[in-house]
Image 1 (cartoon, rainbow, N blue to C red):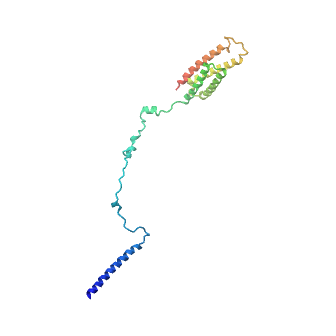
Image 2 (spheres, rainbow, N blue to C red; image 1 turned 90 degrees about the vertical axis):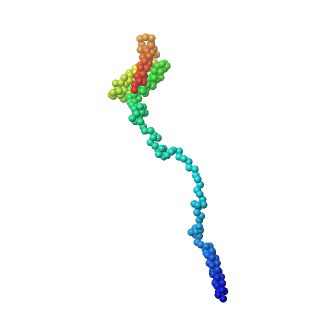
Image 3 (cartoon, rainbow, N blue to C red; image 1 turned 60 degrees about the horizontal axis):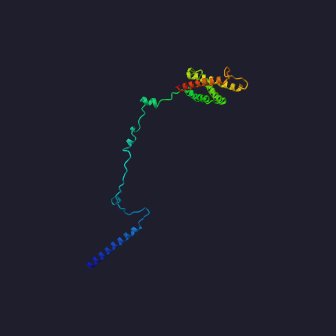
Length: 214
């Protein structure tokens, strides 16, 4: 009788364990998954190893060397050659700049004489030169520049060119009414040619003076 009771007790305990295991398994299906996966994740650090990447070496040895002060040389302000040549300021005065503009005017008048231009073309070039010389005189006549040889020479050749221009204009105007001879008349061809020759010499002299004025 006792053995029978023990056997019944053993069977009862076995069924109770199986029943508990069954409900435990079913409870896993009722787990709330709204908060994400609740299971156990594998350890990726042990199962996977990072890939090796080839890192390109920098072009420069270091940033320090790239931004080194030796990369840009300082300005040699203490070097006389650099100061006199590179940093030398334009010391050309306005007066020198002004007289240089007369060189082209004078050369045009000189070429006009050489090419035997007619009175109209010659006078037009002289007129432009005279107008520029008059303005030049007003600008510097009460200043120290008025004592320069270049200043005086420009005004001198301006007056001379004006006289020849007037002479040629009058000769062109009166030649129909005056009896010309090769000598003795201010409107004669010989006299006009002589005045043109003298003016050409004065122009050449003035051009050389202006080109050598610094």
